[in-house]
Image (cartoon, rainbow, N blue to C red; front, side):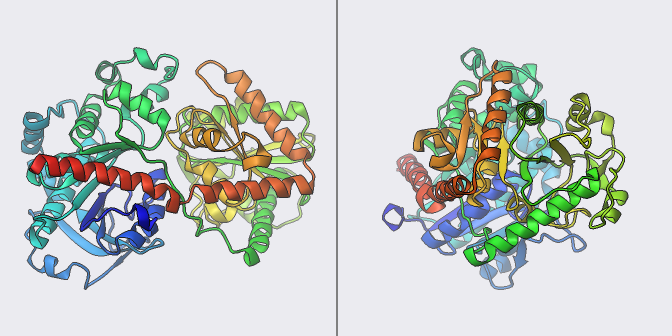
Length: 550
């Protein structure tokens, strides 16, 4: 790692998910932080939104009175923009600056006009979260300029790295106000690519026929797409997380990323070898207790437990495929009784009181609606719940594969499991992530870190990395990558079901081999190996910035 190090005096990285756990980008940054700290101790400053209050503070942020105190003492920020400085409570404990950005709304129109004149960003058709993301990004850019002005950056290597369209205005502001600062822009998924898939259109077979600007007009995504495209073209180095998304960027943003930066991993959340068995046994007991209380069935410890998880994107995340695969697995008759958990946060109201009261009791009758753990606000609008009903999955006594929908965040306080996601994942025997649109895919990587074999698809960045790195067999890497395209849905369903059937009939020796292979795969994706791609991106950015300033 040290041999790959590039000299940096200051590195800013801005994201909506700094100290703000929402999705996969949080995992990217929070796990990368430890390696960046090893390379550039406290020369790394993460910038995130201050969307917290005294009543609801960020559990991932610890304020500090000493960090950047000299700058804070004299910082002159616009009215309505304030900062808190501290450390991000993740491995490496990097410096974090949380920015309150309310004051940026007052100058929104003037700023949008400037961005149109300078970079051609069309904010005219903005709606939804566009203004919020841009206000934060603008404020983050102002904070970066203030720190750079105070510290002095003449003849210094300074990089400002921005993640996703939500921070793109910050990159353009830095490009305008601090031309000597090298900029990096990472898109973790293009706005238009995600929207094409979310609207049920085929992305891959027709990719070469799509024009990003035209699709932005058709899908009412003009402002976000315009901003994302401008940031990609203006950045000193444009990156994305996988080859499949690089192809997407080249077509829809009309620029191929200079560097592909696959998402690395830190396995610090995996219990040590001495504690692993106990943690797994505890997780399995919790899962089986909930399943038994809900369905009224008695499950032995040999019950095979399967899970899928992630954002509630019904088609993009392959939740439809997962549910259909469970029906197909039932037809194939798995080797042991199986319970499949759909752990996807939805618009849930509360934990089911009848289920919460029954957990741990020895009753043998099923609860009403024994397929769901939490009450939904509008069950008739929930795609997962309605698909379960449409497939006639009822968890009846004679059913060999039960399906349980867990429509909430597993944060340790959900009212049923009261365990966080990792403390639950460790109890699984297999996971399935049959994504249709997945630029990288942390969930299967998290799974194999616990030694839990996983099935994913060739349309995920992680799946493509596995195909290039290992033999595509459970025994070789703990992963089975199913070939998925635009028009082979039924074949994907059957392939996943057969992969799971294979795992249910493996003996203990085979399972041990597969589990060990899975752990090795996770270790191969560690940040200490993948950080080299970011070092390459930093080098590209610094070289271009130096050429511009000379």
